[in-house]
Length: 157
Image (cartoon, rainbow, N blue to C red; front, side):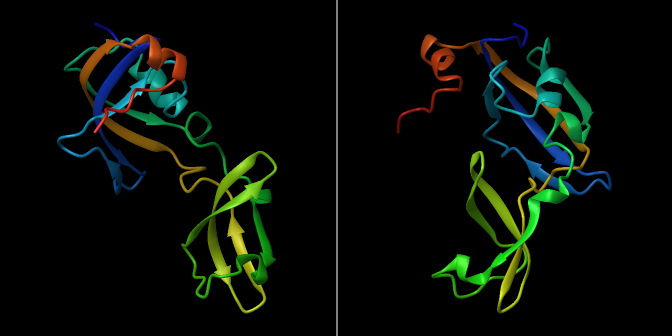
């Protein structure tokens, strides 16, 4: 069975950057599952998976435009430190959920002093080409519930 819209695909992957550094990897016993055509993974990877079958193994490089987008410098800004009430220590690399114009968004602290905190609302992988090594583990028809929900059902447990 081929990967196509309204099918659940399971695959193992290793994600690396341009220098070959591993950024993420599926656990050995737990392939990533997603509902194809529902926008659950980056578009460039979903496109590369389309038509693949169980056992297929391949590598694909996904440009920023087809992954987490280009970096947007307007998403880097300074906010008053008192916006972080109840947080005693704020250090570069820390992440917080902030309310943006389109709803909640993840921001990363770039720098902080006693008065200001510089935050970056770009996805941490924005502007980067992503290199995936992929092996297809399973493909099945999605259930009606999965299709209606737009995602893979979570097993009870």
